[in-house]
Length: 269
Length: 320
Image 1 (cartoon, each protein chain N blue to C red):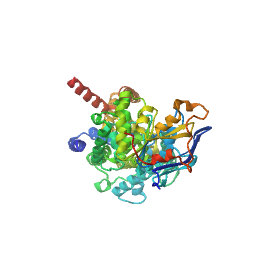
Image 2 (image 1 turned 120 degrees about the vertical axis):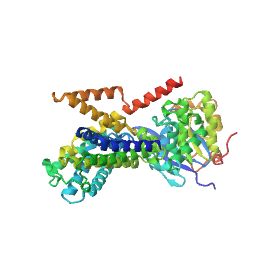
Image 3 (image 1 turned 45 degrees about the vertical axis):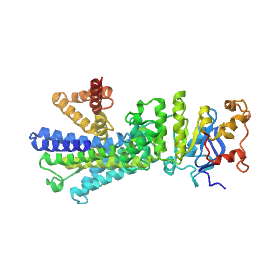
Image 4 (image 1 turned 60 degrees about the horizontal axis):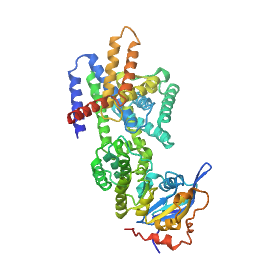
């Protein structure tokens, strides 16, 4: 009997007017895993992140984190409890330097200014921003801003890190540079759930993925399995209203061997 | 540390200046410029560091001023105790208004309008209720002594207002190197990002408006002690609100010295144009307005930003 998963979603749903953005999504994220959430644009991935982190309150369903019901709890309280998200559209404090930006996150655990600034330096080194500590955040490149987004969230010392497309908009070289950074964070003991469009990255990083389309979970499993089940059909096809060729998600009561196998935090080499 | 040294140097320089100046014109100028700097600093704490642009800071000014005068005339309190009450009640009103508006997520122009409305409500209340003296206003009896916070010479008043300004500078310097300040500026720059990093925006903004209102209340109390007369228009009218925010914006919001610099420059400008065009009443205000427009147009980051830009250009020039 495994311990309770770090994050549990039970039948979570939200609608914006007539648009059912997320419809009855349930899944568990085990402590220590590095998982992915994939799906076409508009599938509801970012909305799901907003629901988990407290920026949106679900119409229906429950969200549990580390054994507590956090449905609709304010984002700052979730961050304090160790659940931190990043934003797909990067949100730097543009007027402040990189160091000051990261220190805002570090202050969550560190009241003293000097200690927070020192912690910021450590985190910057971890994500490869050490050379740009004194630059204004507004002067960073896209890749730099993505790193900053990651660094700030990391500075809050999260247990669960929700990464929303940290690789989007980067060139292949920058992606190749970033992948080890994300992997190192996960090896450091932080549970990571990432939304990603760059399939090559998901394939090499995630040990388990969930596939979301039109607000519903349509598949789950190890990336290779999801891809293989799909045959040659690219995931993009899921945009059609027809059900995808991918194996459907098993209900929570009858979990298939594939989805239970993810609870073991094994990492692909 | 460097901030503390410059603040100390500023305090000593002004204190020395106040004892050297003999001409009444200059001592009055110095006092009024410092008083304007105090109001601008108060506004800057919330507007500059918190990004919440209030258009009704007269609300806190007036609260402080009325408490200061009424605590003496009605309750018979000592002026110094009245001062503490004035600052505290302005801060409480600040917290109250902040709780009402920030709780419901009012930002930008909506927040500005709500603060303006609150100031107007208080102005009308001050006219209607009896104990404020209504539209006629209230007088503070003249009893010149340091114990009564009234001074025969300008120097005493200058030292008092200088004390407030230095306190404002110290609080601002603290904001720049503390967790509270970091959180406040994070909320100013991007509230959602700040929330995701564990910052409670409501608590941070409430702290800022309370501090800001307290300093504004001190400004109100000082005003009453110097001019010994108060009516609802002086206390809660829009003039003070505008004065506080214009000086802060001209000097450079979100900076340590901007409000002081802005108040000094605007005050000098006002005096200069008044002397120059004394025989054509109103013309000084036209000139004042034109210069204000020019500053906003060409120095949008404020006068203290000019110094920074020039220094940066100088460094760049030397490096290149």
